[in-house]
Image (cartoon, rainbow, N blue to C red):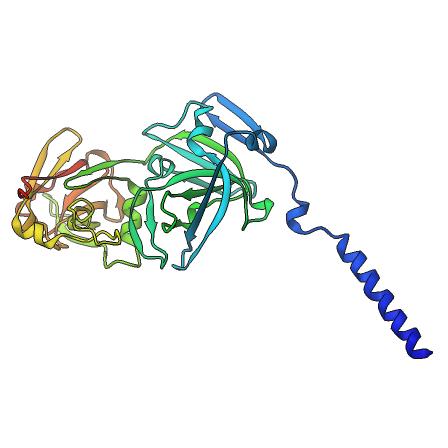
Length: 334
Protein backbone atom coordinates (compact mmCIF):
# COMPACT_ATOMS: atom_id res chain seq x y z
CA UNK A 1 0.00 0.00 0.00
CA UNK A 2 2.79 2.36 0.95
CA UNK A 3 4.61 1.45 -2.29
CA UNK A 4 1.49 2.32 -4.30
CA UNK A 5 1.17 5.64 -2.48
CA UNK A 6 4.81 6.51 -3.21
CA UNK A 7 4.35 5.60 -6.87
CA UNK A 8 1.29 7.84 -7.05
CA UNK A 9 3.20 10.75 -5.49
CA UNK A 10 6.07 10.34 -7.96
CA UNK A 11 3.63 10.24 -10.86
CA UNK A 12 1.89 13.41 -9.67
CA UNK A 13 5.26 15.17 -9.28
CA UNK A 14 6.30 14.27 -12.82
CA UNK A 15 2.96 15.49 -14.19
CA UNK A 16 3.19 18.78 -12.30
CA UNK A 17 6.78 19.29 -13.49
CA UNK A 18 5.70 18.71 -17.10
CA UNK A 19 2.86 21.24 -16.78
CA UNK A 20 5.13 23.87 -15.23
CA UNK A 21 7.94 23.52 -17.80
CA UNK A 22 5.56 23.29 -20.75
CA UNK A 23 4.16 26.67 -19.72
CA UNK A 24 7.63 28.27 -20.14
CA UNK A 25 8.14 29.16 -23.83
CA UNK A 26 11.39 28.59 -25.71
CA UNK A 27 13.47 31.71 -26.32
CA UNK A 28 12.58 31.60 -30.00
CA UNK A 29 8.86 31.51 -29.17
CA UNK A 30 9.16 34.42 -26.75
CA UNK A 31 10.73 36.84 -29.24
CA UNK A 32 8.64 39.85 -30.20
CA UNK A 33 7.95 41.17 -33.69
CA UNK A 34 10.62 43.58 -34.87
CA UNK A 35 10.79 46.59 -37.16
CA UNK A 36 13.53 47.94 -39.41
CA UNK A 37 14.58 51.53 -40.11
CA UNK A 38 16.17 52.28 -43.51
CA UNK A 39 17.61 55.72 -44.14
CA UNK A 40 19.71 57.68 -46.63
CA UNK A 41 20.22 61.40 -46.19
CA UNK A 42 16.86 62.95 -45.36
CA UNK A 43 14.86 59.98 -46.60
CA UNK A 44 13.78 57.42 -43.99
CA UNK A 45 11.31 54.56 -44.04
CA UNK A 46 10.27 52.05 -41.40
CA UNK A 47 9.27 48.50 -42.22
CA UNK A 48 7.52 46.19 -39.81
CA UNK A 49 8.28 42.51 -39.79
CA UNK A 50 4.94 41.83 -41.44
CA UNK A 51 5.64 44.38 -44.22
CA UNK A 52 9.08 42.93 -44.92
CA UNK A 53 7.69 39.41 -45.12
CA UNK A 54 5.17 40.56 -47.74
CA UNK A 55 7.94 41.68 -50.12
CA UNK A 56 9.00 39.34 -52.98
CA UNK A 57 10.87 36.57 -51.16
CA UNK A 58 14.09 34.74 -51.97
CA UNK A 59 14.53 31.17 -50.70
CA UNK A 60 18.11 29.91 -50.72
CA UNK A 61 20.74 27.79 -49.00
CA UNK A 62 23.87 29.41 -47.61
CA UNK A 63 26.73 28.70 -45.24
CA UNK A 64 29.55 30.60 -43.61
CA UNK A 65 33.15 30.27 -42.49
CA UNK A 66 33.84 31.07 -38.84
CA UNK A 67 36.82 33.19 -37.82
CA UNK A 68 38.66 30.07 -36.72
CA UNK A 69 38.35 28.53 -40.19
CA UNK A 70 35.60 25.95 -39.67
CA UNK A 71 32.65 25.94 -42.07
CA UNK A 72 28.99 25.66 -41.10
CA UNK A 73 26.05 24.92 -43.36
CA UNK A 74 24.58 25.28 -45.80
CA UNK A 75 21.27 26.15 -44.13
CA UNK A 76 17.93 27.18 -45.59
CA UNK A 77 17.11 30.91 -45.43
CA UNK A 78 14.30 33.14 -46.62
CA UNK A 79 14.52 36.88 -47.12
CA UNK A 80 14.80 39.76 -49.59
CA UNK A 81 17.62 41.18 -51.69
CA UNK A 82 19.46 43.98 -49.89
CA UNK A 83 19.59 46.04 -53.09
CA UNK A 84 15.77 46.00 -53.26
CA UNK A 85 15.53 47.31 -49.72
CA UNK A 86 18.05 50.08 -50.32
CA UNK A 87 16.27 51.13 -53.52
CA UNK A 88 13.45 52.33 -51.26
CA UNK A 89 15.75 55.17 -50.11
CA UNK A 90 17.57 55.77 -53.39
CA UNK A 91 20.00 52.84 -53.50
CA UNK A 92 23.72 52.76 -52.74
CA UNK A 93 26.38 54.17 -55.04
CA UNK A 94 30.15 54.16 -55.34
CA UNK A 95 31.60 56.36 -52.62
CA UNK A 96 28.89 55.28 -50.18
CA UNK A 97 28.80 52.51 -47.60
CA UNK A 98 26.09 50.81 -45.58
CA UNK A 99 26.10 51.38 -41.83
CA UNK A 100 24.27 48.55 -40.08
CA UNK A 101 23.18 48.79 -36.44
CA UNK A 102 21.90 45.81 -34.47
CA UNK A 103 19.41 45.91 -31.62
CA UNK A 104 22.22 45.41 -29.08
CA UNK A 105 24.01 48.54 -30.36
CA UNK A 106 26.75 46.85 -32.42
CA UNK A 107 27.62 48.88 -35.55
CA UNK A 108 29.45 47.79 -38.68
CA UNK A 109 30.06 49.57 -41.99
CA UNK A 110 29.77 47.49 -45.16
CA UNK A 111 31.68 48.89 -48.14
CA UNK A 112 29.99 49.40 -51.48
CA UNK A 113 31.73 46.29 -52.80
CA UNK A 114 30.57 44.22 -49.83
CA UNK A 115 26.97 45.33 -50.36
CA UNK A 116 27.16 44.34 -54.03
CA UNK A 117 28.51 40.88 -53.16
CA UNK A 118 32.14 41.43 -54.13
CA UNK A 119 33.54 39.52 -51.14
CA UNK A 120 35.85 36.55 -50.73
CA UNK A 121 34.34 33.09 -50.90
CA UNK A 122 35.60 29.84 -49.38
CA UNK A 123 35.31 26.15 -50.22
CA UNK A 124 33.69 23.48 -48.02
CA UNK A 125 36.99 23.06 -46.14
CA UNK A 126 37.24 26.77 -45.35
CA UNK A 127 40.03 27.51 -47.83
CA UNK A 128 40.06 30.88 -49.57
CA UNK A 129 38.74 30.74 -53.14
CA UNK A 130 38.13 34.02 -54.97
CA UNK A 131 36.13 37.24 -55.12
CA UNK A 132 32.50 37.62 -56.08
CA UNK A 133 29.75 35.16 -57.01
CA UNK A 134 27.70 36.14 -53.97
CA UNK A 135 24.63 38.23 -53.16
CA UNK A 136 23.68 40.03 -49.95
CA UNK A 137 20.27 39.21 -48.48
CA UNK A 138 18.36 40.41 -45.46
CA UNK A 139 16.67 37.30 -44.10
CA UNK A 140 13.80 36.75 -41.68
CA UNK A 141 13.48 32.96 -41.51
CA UNK A 142 15.72 29.86 -41.50
CA UNK A 143 15.98 26.28 -40.35
CA UNK A 144 18.99 27.22 -38.20
CA UNK A 145 18.48 30.50 -36.36
CA UNK A 146 15.96 31.39 -33.66
CA UNK A 147 13.61 34.30 -34.47
CA UNK A 148 15.60 36.55 -32.11
CA UNK A 149 18.45 36.50 -34.68
CA UNK A 150 16.34 38.23 -37.32
CA UNK A 151 16.46 40.22 -39.43
CA UNK A 152 19.88 38.87 -40.41
CA UNK A 153 22.36 39.60 -43.19
CA UNK A 154 23.62 36.58 -45.11
CA UNK A 155 25.42 36.05 -48.40
CA UNK A 156 24.22 33.45 -50.86
CA UNK A 157 25.53 32.09 -54.14
CA UNK A 158 24.19 30.20 -57.10
CA UNK A 159 26.87 27.66 -56.23
CA UNK A 160 25.88 26.02 -52.93
CA UNK A 161 29.43 24.84 -52.27
CA UNK A 162 30.65 28.43 -51.80
CA UNK A 163 30.79 29.83 -48.28
CA UNK A 164 31.33 33.38 -47.06
CA UNK A 165 32.83 35.06 -44.01
CA UNK A 166 30.80 34.56 -40.83
CA UNK A 167 31.61 38.00 -39.32
CA UNK A 168 29.65 39.55 -42.22
CA UNK A 169 26.49 37.71 -41.15
CA UNK A 170 25.16 40.36 -38.76
CA UNK A 171 22.02 39.50 -36.82
CA UNK A 172 19.25 41.25 -34.90
CA UNK A 173 19.42 44.26 -37.20
CA UNK A 174 17.51 47.42 -36.28
CA UNK A 175 18.79 50.00 -38.77
CA UNK A 176 20.26 50.25 -42.27
CA UNK A 177 21.83 53.61 -43.15
CA UNK A 178 23.45 54.61 -46.45
CA UNK A 179 26.30 56.99 -45.58
CA UNK A 180 29.11 58.77 -47.37
CA UNK A 181 32.27 56.73 -47.08
CA UNK A 182 35.30 58.62 -45.77
CA UNK A 183 38.04 56.04 -46.34
CA UNK A 184 36.59 53.70 -48.93
CA UNK A 185 38.36 53.27 -52.25
CA UNK A 186 38.34 50.98 -55.25
CA UNK A 187 41.13 49.88 -57.55
CA UNK A 188 40.34 48.12 -60.82
CA UNK A 189 42.37 45.08 -61.87
CA UNK A 190 42.27 43.86 -65.46
CA UNK A 191 44.18 41.25 -67.45
CA UNK A 192 43.09 37.77 -68.52
CA UNK A 193 40.49 38.17 -65.79
CA UNK A 194 39.19 41.27 -64.01
CA UNK A 195 38.44 42.23 -60.43
CA UNK A 196 37.85 45.23 -58.19
CA UNK A 197 39.39 45.56 -54.74
CA UNK A 198 38.86 47.96 -51.85
CA UNK A 199 40.43 48.47 -48.42
CA UNK A 200 38.44 45.63 -46.86
CA UNK A 201 39.56 43.16 -49.52
CA UNK A 202 43.16 44.42 -49.36
CA UNK A 203 43.25 43.95 -45.58
CA UNK A 204 41.65 40.51 -45.88
CA UNK A 205 44.39 39.32 -48.24
CA UNK A 206 47.12 40.60 -45.91
CA UNK A 207 45.52 38.92 -42.88
CA UNK A 208 44.59 35.67 -44.66
CA UNK A 209 45.88 32.75 -42.56
CA UNK A 210 45.48 30.34 -45.50
CA UNK A 211 48.06 31.99 -47.73
CA UNK A 212 51.72 33.02 -47.26
CA UNK A 213 50.99 36.70 -47.95
CA UNK A 214 53.16 38.30 -45.31
CA UNK A 215 53.07 42.06 -45.06
CA UNK A 216 55.84 43.59 -47.17
CA UNK A 217 57.88 46.36 -45.55
CA UNK A 218 60.53 48.78 -46.74
CA UNK A 219 62.68 51.16 -44.75
CA UNK A 220 64.13 54.04 -46.75
CA UNK A 221 65.13 57.69 -46.46
CA UNK A 222 63.22 60.65 -47.83
CA UNK A 223 65.02 63.48 -49.64
CA UNK A 224 65.70 65.18 -46.30
CA UNK A 225 67.31 62.11 -44.78
CA UNK A 226 64.35 61.14 -42.58
CA UNK A 227 63.58 57.46 -42.07
CA UNK A 228 60.38 56.22 -43.75
CA UNK A 229 58.77 52.81 -43.37
CA UNK A 230 56.22 51.56 -45.89
CA UNK A 231 53.94 48.55 -45.42
CA UNK A 232 51.72 46.77 -47.89
CA UNK A 233 51.05 43.76 -50.10
CA UNK A 234 53.37 42.34 -52.79
CA UNK A 235 52.21 43.36 -56.26
CA UNK A 236 52.41 39.80 -57.60
CA UNK A 237 49.70 38.69 -55.15
CA UNK A 238 47.15 40.98 -56.80
CA UNK A 239 48.43 40.08 -60.26
CA UNK A 240 47.60 36.46 -59.40
CA UNK A 241 43.92 37.47 -59.32
CA UNK A 242 43.92 38.44 -63.01
CA UNK A 243 46.65 36.38 -64.74
CA UNK A 244 44.55 33.29 -65.49
CA UNK A 245 46.55 30.95 -63.28
CA UNK A 246 43.67 29.79 -61.08
CA UNK A 247 43.53 26.16 -59.98
CA UNK A 248 40.62 23.94 -61.17
CA UNK A 249 38.83 24.41 -57.84
CA UNK A 250 38.91 28.20 -58.24
CA UNK A 251 41.76 29.18 -55.91
CA UNK A 252 43.86 32.14 -57.06
CA UNK A 253 47.33 31.03 -58.13
CA UNK A 254 50.17 33.09 -59.60
CA UNK A 255 50.72 32.12 -63.25
CA UNK A 256 54.47 31.45 -63.35
CA UNK A 257 54.35 30.18 -66.93
CA UNK A 258 52.72 33.37 -68.20
CA UNK A 259 55.23 35.51 -66.29
CA UNK A 260 58.08 33.62 -67.94
CA UNK A 261 56.58 34.21 -71.40
CA UNK A 262 56.51 37.90 -70.58
CA UNK A 263 54.01 40.74 -70.25
CA UNK A 264 53.97 44.13 -68.56
CA UNK A 265 52.17 45.36 -65.47
CA UNK A 266 50.82 48.87 -65.95
CA UNK A 267 49.97 50.87 -62.84
CA UNK A 268 47.80 53.94 -63.40
CA UNK A 269 47.30 56.81 -60.95
CA UNK A 270 44.12 58.79 -60.48
CA UNK A 271 45.55 61.58 -62.65
CA UNK A 272 46.31 58.93 -65.36
CA UNK A 273 50.08 59.04 -64.86
CA UNK A 274 51.41 55.50 -65.27
CA UNK A 275 54.47 53.27 -64.94
CA UNK A 276 55.17 49.79 -66.33
CA UNK A 277 57.09 46.84 -64.95
CA UNK A 278 58.08 43.60 -66.66
CA UNK A 279 56.40 40.42 -65.42
CA UNK A 280 59.76 38.88 -64.56
CA UNK A 281 60.51 41.85 -62.30
CA UNK A 282 57.41 41.37 -60.18
CA UNK A 283 57.09 37.55 -60.27
CA UNK A 284 56.94 36.39 -56.63
CA UNK A 285 58.99 39.45 -55.71
CA UNK A 286 58.05 40.71 -52.23
CA UNK A 287 60.36 43.72 -52.66
CA UNK A 288 57.93 45.41 -55.07
CA UNK A 289 54.68 46.03 -53.28
CA UNK A 290 51.59 48.17 -52.96
CA UNK A 291 51.96 50.25 -49.82
CA UNK A 292 48.87 51.11 -47.79
CA UNK A 293 50.71 52.55 -44.77
CA UNK A 294 53.58 54.93 -44.20
CA UNK A 295 55.20 55.01 -40.75
CA UNK A 296 52.31 52.93 -39.42
CA UNK A 297 49.62 55.34 -40.66
CA UNK A 298 47.18 54.77 -43.52
CA UNK A 299 48.27 56.72 -46.59
CA UNK A 300 46.62 60.07 -47.26
CA UNK A 301 46.85 62.98 -49.67
CA UNK A 302 48.31 62.23 -53.11
CA UNK A 303 49.57 58.82 -51.90
CA UNK A 304 46.06 57.57 -51.10
CA UNK A 305 44.95 54.83 -51.43
CA UNK A 306 47.97 52.84 -52.63
CA UNK A 307 51.53 53.74 -53.59
CA UNK A 308 54.06 51.49 -55.30
CA UNK A 309 57.05 50.93 -53.01
CA UNK A 310 59.90 48.56 -52.24
CA UNK A 311 63.60 48.01 -52.52
CA UNK A 312 63.04 46.09 -55.76
CA UNK A 313 61.90 49.11 -57.78
CA UNK A 314 64.31 49.94 -60.65
CA UNK A 315 64.34 53.64 -59.70
CA UNK A 316 62.55 55.75 -57.12
CA UNK A 317 60.69 57.43 -60.01
CA UNK A 318 58.68 54.19 -60.29
CA UNK A 319 57.12 54.95 -56.91
CA UNK A 320 53.75 55.90 -58.41
CA UNK A 321 51.25 57.43 -55.99
CA UNK A 322 47.46 57.30 -55.77
CA UNK A 323 47.06 54.10 -57.78
CA UNK A 324 43.58 53.72 -59.29
CA UNK A 325 44.04 50.87 -61.75
CA UNK A 326 46.36 47.94 -62.50
CA UNK A 327 46.46 46.34 -65.95
CA UNK A 328 48.31 43.45 -67.54
CA UNK A 329 49.36 44.60 -71.01
CA UNK A 330 51.38 43.16 -73.90
CA UNK A 331 50.13 39.70 -72.96
CA UNK A 332 51.52 36.77 -74.97
CA UNK A 333 49.41 35.66 -77.89
CA UNK A 334 47.68 32.32 -77.48
